[in-house]
Amino acid sequence: MGMSSDRAPALTRGPLSQQALMDLYAPPQESWVRANFVSTMDGRATGPDGLSGSINSPADKAVFDALRAFSDVVVVASGTIRAEGYTRLNTPDEWVEMRTAAGRAVHPPLVVVTGSGDVPDRVLEEGPDFGDVLVALTEQTSQDAVDRLTARIGKDNIIVAGKDRVDAATLLAKLRERGWTQVLTEGGPTLLGAWVDSGVIDEIDLTVRPLALGGEGPSILTGSSEALREARLLSVLSVEDDLMLRYQLSVSK
Ligand SMILES: NC(=O)c1ccc[n+]([C@@H]2O[C@H](COP(=O)([O-])OP(=O)(O)OC[C@H]3O[C@@H](n4cnc5c(N)ncnc54)[C@H](OP(=O)(O)O)[C@@H]3O)[C@@H](O)[C@H]2O)c1
Image 1 (spheres, rainbow, N blue to C red):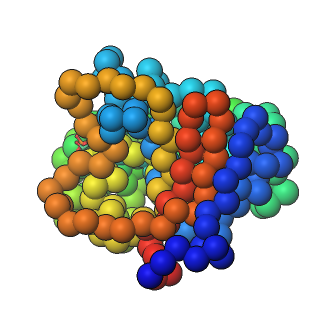
Image 2 (tube, rainbow, N blue to C red):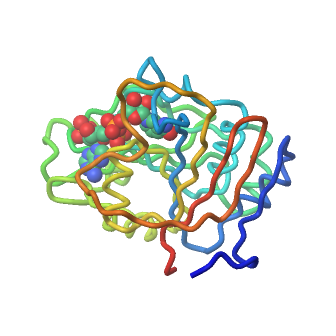
């Protein structure tokens, strides 16, 4: 199949207005699962300090905020929650109106995916300017951990979604039951590997930063699968030397 002109992805050059971000990142379907990641040009998902904060940029952050603004719920695995110092989510002022006009909560709820139940206290703390937090765990999560989490966030915010691992399709079905159909995951690589393997990811939003790092470290996707999966390029946003790519993985959808 050749690349016909009607399939040529839109190329947009920054700097970007909020309207341009809204046009570019509006979800294409009512039910859509996205994953947002940043990578160096040599494919590394973390900088020399082992974190992604050291490889991102203002343009990447603008897209990151836009993707959150379009989501009903954000899902993040506990490894990333612990490493990156996550708290509950807070919507920047400039996105609040757009969220409320669309009938979304001011701040998106955060779902933490964990087997161990090891979720840092700072994520469980309540605050008026933050969204809810839910924890997705397994039938094998220790009773001590379940009791601690239930005492902090209440049993309605605990989702059991698998026997020994949190199963992506089961979790997504439970989120849909709550009316959350626009789902964003911010990782990390272990979670993304499992979700891609399960076939639940519709779109990967990938920022490529003009950084050559070398050495060793994870790519955006780790796991056991060696299967090649082909994606379709939906759009390209170029701001200074950064590329923000939208790839559709569920090509048949
Ligand atoms: N470049 C980027 O865009 C980006 C994005 C995110 C993260 N990162 C980087 O990635 C690194 C973390 O990588 P990682 O692969 O360890 O992260 P991860 O996927 O966030 O965390 C892995 C941990 O999360 C829990 N988990 C993940 N999937 C699960 C499942 N299906 N069921 C149950 N538990 C599950 C498990 O923890 P427990 O059972 O122990 O709780 C597991 O050990 C950090 O350095 C972070 O900075 C980069």
